[in-house]
Image 1 (tube, helix red, strand yellow):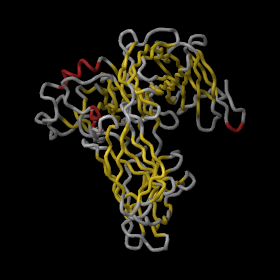
Image 2: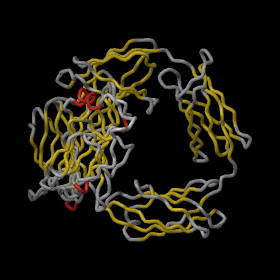
Image 3: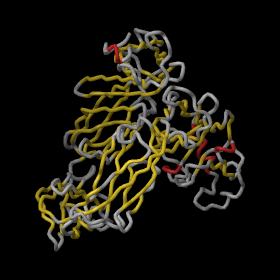
Image 4: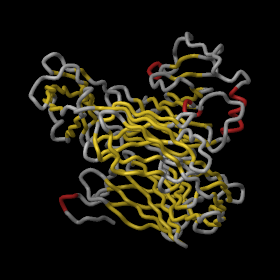
Length: 523
């Protein structure tokens, strides 16, 4: 369930393809508007939608939700609570399949509204990784974090938002105005503007304070894209003039070909094909179809392209340099070499040697950052994976708490047995951040890191939260042993100090020193 204005609403599983302005309650098919605290129309009745499982998806979810949750607070940059903020938790990856549920995983959403203390909670939810987005009401910029279910310190800090007018001229290198060029700020939710017959454009963008700058780009077919980075000093006013000069592309051509297996000549579908030119600063990508075919259109002609075909788990990567694309185009046929298959047998434990059951990690080859598979430990903390290519592996979580394990090496046609040590358990750490006078420092960023190395395998974990107005913070589900506490707050020196939750206790007071003292530390 999900809370709104301090109360709970039943049936808050949503499926709306990414809508962020309303809460769909599947219990009765109503659309709940955050601003009306649940009073909405009954026009959106989902009872006849054929993209939902007719066999009651709620029944299938009961076995998956298992009392998991995500909770935290919505705070401003000073740690003050922000009530009435709508939040959406969207599944990024699950621990297990969803039997009998005909809803795409990426569209499973839970929703909540922060209460008077800025607190929110999604519960119960399906176990997995989530992107939690805070959708504000215009005073603050939207923000999001990626967290794992079971996290109760998922605090979100919102920056105040203000309007700035961007205007200027887009011209060619010959000084001629360019009509219909698209000028776009790299800010989520901000639309771009097209230039007029004089090459002029004008648009209004919402910029969050303390963002650290923003990019703005101009694009037009037949010209190279230009990106201009604006820093905080550029954005201090209410209006800013930004001019672009676009360089014309001399000529373009088409690159087409097929990817097959070198072993049997059969087509290889679903692999990524990339062409990259350092000199031209261009990158083109495609994915092979069922017949192994791919097409790259509008490729700028040049003679320094690198071709990379990602072989995944079954094939070696294909790399070839100094490829020329002429005005007549290029026909490129690639044969991928199959790789021998290996197996990995692993046990997941913490520093105290306790097994960690039901723990999910994403596994990939070091050379293949986007080709991942998910593994979950059993009741004894063990898992086995077969059919792996030889080479270095990385096991990780990108959501908080972030986890990375490196140094696992697989030999050709071999079985590898490893022990993976993680920072996970039943310990906790709670604390308060204060200044030299003992006053709380709200809105501080607090990170807790941990690392361990043995037998060539290195493990690393990072947790992150923010202090409230009283300076309070907390972390849970910590493993035993030494950690490093890092606290950063505006106007203060960054503090970094070790803390062993077993030896030093579960409670800590962190005192920051102002930057003007230039001491570089705290107690």
